[in-house]
Image (cartoon, rainbow, N blue to C red):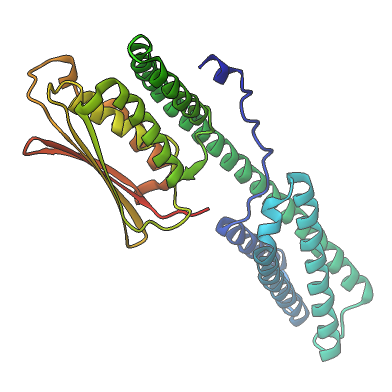
Length: 353
């Protein structure tokens, strides 16, 4: 396990801009603020020319907000994937170009229709420049907010990744300790089987060193479980019996690494090992309604208040937290004891590569 600590921690990716629903609200809020300021500034003047100018500003503000929101929506995926500086430059240029086109079109339409015929060229240029300056200020604030949102999401994602690694690392020592004990007990009795067990353990170590933030194929997780059970089988012999029933599971279905193995380890430790006659672990996979259901059943021996009687709440809670970070409320893990049988039920949504 010391080798695992040599791996450099995953570098955090730089924050990027984030454009979502809040961005559109901010754009329209800026347009309304511009209109409100125009109304306040024009209150002393109630002439027809002032009212026409106010209407021109309102149409320009609303038109710019609509087109800007549309362009941001169409290019949001590209903008969200760009480095922050490039994204800000591209978005700012796009929004400013949109504003300039809207102002030019409205000004031209006003003069052609005669509504703004009395407006001098100087006034028109002044309004055009004022509109661009106001838009630049609004867009600068909006892009800053988009950047801050991107930083917030990046920090949150990094925090979740770190928590996933921590939760997985809490499983690793227990897993390694039991596996090494199993192999150590075989070295003198059966060196050949111990050698095979070491090969299986080497494969399991590679799984333990994997990135907890990534999902793995359910087939790979199943193979990890079989390798673990093969090690325990060498130690427990015929006392450990395993029945697998795998129904039609969607190809490429994925699951968080080391989700099932700790559940099987608990089944061995709490159900099979303390039982003098051993027992059977039943494992059943099935697919229904875009979910994969995994059921694990093991006997519950009557052993009083010994160490094996203590529950496995830590492992169960670790897995629940990891599932919640990957799937939210779409996944669940429950357990119950009924008629001398301990049954664990796992539900995860179908996620394919």
